[in-house]
Amino acid sequence: MSDKKIRLGVLSCGRFAQRRILPQIIKIPSFSLCAIHNRTLSKAREIAEHYKIPFYTHIEKDFFDYPHLDAIIICSPNYLHQKHILLSLRNGKAVFSEKPMTPTYEQSQEILTELTEEKTLVIGQCYRFKNTLCVAKKLIKEGKLGNLLSIKVHMHMNIPKTGWRMTKRYGGGVALEIGVHVIDSIRFLTDSEFTSIYSLGKQILDDQQEDIDISFSALAEMKNGLPVSFDASLEAPYSTGFTIVGSKGFLESTYAIRGDDDGRESLTFFDNHDGSFDVPLPKQNVYYEELAHFANVIEGAESQLTPENAAENVKIVEALKLSMSTHKRVNIEDFVLA
Image (cartoon, rainbow, N blue to C red; front, side, top):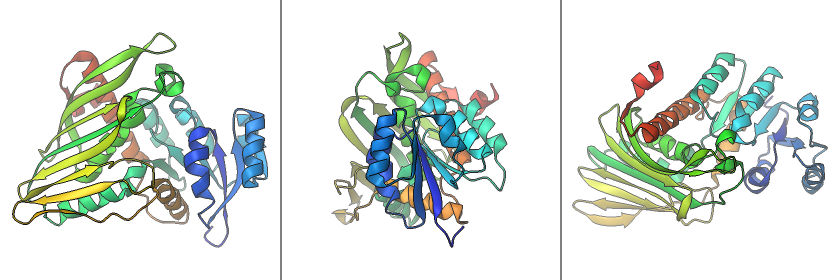
C-alpha cells in the first residue's frame, strides 16, 4: 500500500473531527480523504464540498457499504466505539479510533479477541507524542532527575453539562473523557503499570437522571513502587500540567497535556545544584502526529498506540470508578480477576 494513496473515510464527523481531525488528514501525503459520515445529511454535504470529498452520507450502513476505502477513522461517541471498531475490522479496514477504546474493559477485551496479525487497530492516545511528555521521559531515562520520588498530573476543563460527554449511558464522564489521557500519560512517563488506586470524586445527575462523574482526585502506586497522584475535572477552569520529583531535581510543566498547537506549553527543569532552566519545546500538533503514525502503521511500522495499551487504560478507569463508588483502595490485579 506504500506506493499508492490510502483511501480514508471518517465516521461520525462531528465538531471534534471537523476541528481536530479533518484539517490534519489533508496534510498527510499518503492519505486520500474519500468518504465522510455525519448524522445530518446537509452537514455531511457541506463538509464534503469544503474538502472535495467524493462520498458523503448520514446513514451508517451506507458509509460501511462504500467499497472504495482502505481505512476508517472513528470519531463517534464513546458508547459506539466497540460497535464501530468491530464493523470496520470485519469489513477488512485498517482502523483508527478516538480514545477511549471502549467505555468498559469487557468491551475492550472483546475487541482484542477479534484482532489478528492481518488486522490494524490504532487507538488515539495522542499525548504519547506530546513534546512535554516525550522530553520529560527522555530526561528521566538519562538520569537527570536521579531516582524518581513522585509524579503529580492534573487535567481540568469546563464543558457544558449536556450532550453525550456528560451522559453516563453514552460513555461520558470525566474518567473516560479526560481521565484516560492522564492515566495513559502516567504509564508513558513511568514505563510502569498501576498496581493499586484510591480515588474520591464528585457526581452529578445527567440528562437521563443517572449519576455521572464530573471530577476526581486519585492516589495510586505503580509496579515500580512509585507513588503518583492525579486529578481531573470537567467543571474547573482550563488547566493541565505535571510535576515530576526526583532525588537530583524536578520537572514542572504547564499546559502539558493539550491538543492546541499554539506553543503555550512550558517545561522547566529545577536542578539541585545548577538552578532552573526552561526546556525548549518546538510547536507541534499531536493530532497530526497520531494520524501520520496511523498511516505509517498501515504501511508496516510498529504501532505506539496499540489496542492492548488502550485496553489497559480502560481497565484503570474502571478501577478508579470502582474506588470512587466504594471509597476503598482497589488492587488492580484483584479487580481484573473479579
